[in-house]
Image (cartoon, rainbow, N blue to C red; front, side, top):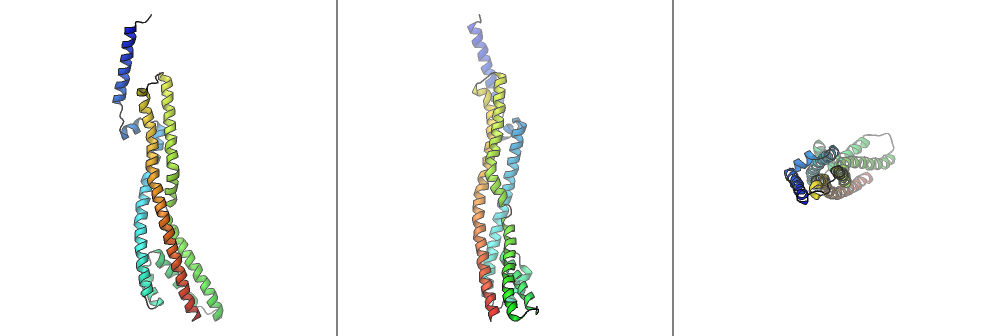
Length: 248
């Protein structure tokens, strides 16, 4: 029969050993990453890369939207204060570096090409010219909006998928912790805390990547919608001006 005093002493030694092991475990961010399973490490690296890329897109889009909005406002002021379209076109075509100016230049180039063509009767030229100008402006607007919207899809994907990717890393890490518990036959929280903390760290990184991506995507999506409507309004107004020129 085991001596109770000896048994108690052994349990005390085991508890002290576990406590010392946990105390020596590195619970810093780098420490948890280094002690994680290779699958959990892969998940963490993927999420960190996605987060860095999302922040690069966020800064790039923030500067881009501020730039195009300022240039579009300045262009509209100059456009409505100009006296002649052809003179304003000559001045603008050399520095058409934002969507609204590019739409204007594309429409004016189609206008001048059609004016120099004498292959149709006058009425046929008028009818087909307006249709071509509308199509040219539509194509130019779509092309420029594709550039403005580029990168937003990655923000949306990261915002939707990153928490689940982090959760996958957490589930995998907890499975490994439970396997370690079964092998060691020690169910104390002191023994399983390091493995579980490393597993939960993957979910934390997933949320760190997803939350800014979702906020930025919603913000930039509304900016894209407003700017697209602004370009559409300008195209409609410019089409009306050209229609008056054709009818005159």
